[in-house]
Image 1 (cartoon, rainbow, N blue to C red):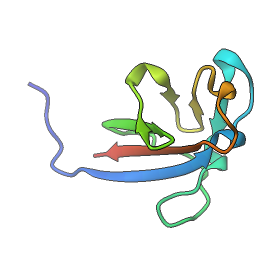
Image 2 (image 1 turned 90 degrees about the vertical axis):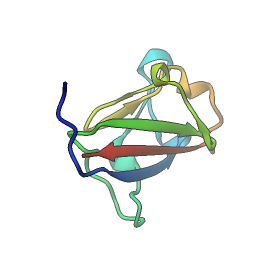
Image 3 (image 1 turned 180 degrees about the vertical axis):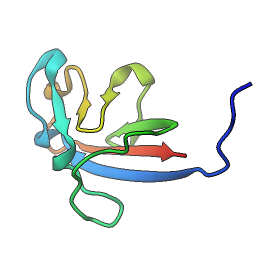
Length: 94
């Protein structure tokens, strides 16, 4: 049985689709384009996390919709969305 860490917290990051680059499968938004919970600039996303939830226009997305690394959120075909569409990532850290 895996060890459950006793501490859980979340970090939230916001941007818009218009902050992304690329097309099709390579569409991505760099971590540096996001702001954090306090409105501050982001340099990287958490390196170790339990899970994350991607919200596109306030709608939670399924796990196959995106990939998150410390430097990038990749949303395949995200370039077809309106540039003003809000993006929120909630990363649960432990």
